[in-house]
Length: 108
Image (cartoon, rainbow, N blue to C red; front, side, top):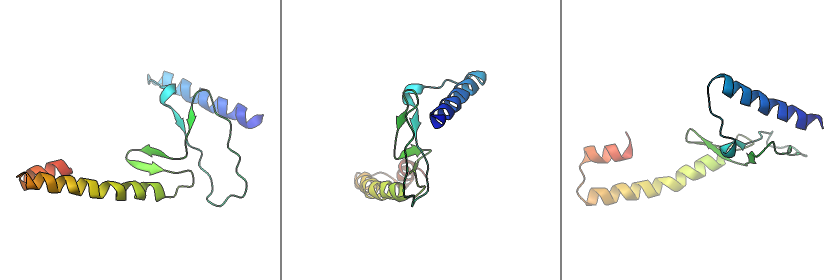
């Protein structure tokens, strides 16, 4: 199958690039996210390469990526986290933490 051969060639190219640039590629931690158009009628997922895990959502630099480049998962994650962090700040303020210290906890 031509697609599978192209995939193996791409993965091997990445491995050789990492070695040439003195980088360590941890294959066990490598994940694969296949981007596609949002309204595709037929989408065939390519076969896995080596031991990479195929995922439907991945977090990179704090941003959740989905195959269709929608931001649903990222927004949902942020909306879930906000009340938890605000509650933590409220508890810390009630315990007598100063505004400067609260700012350090918040990360501003």
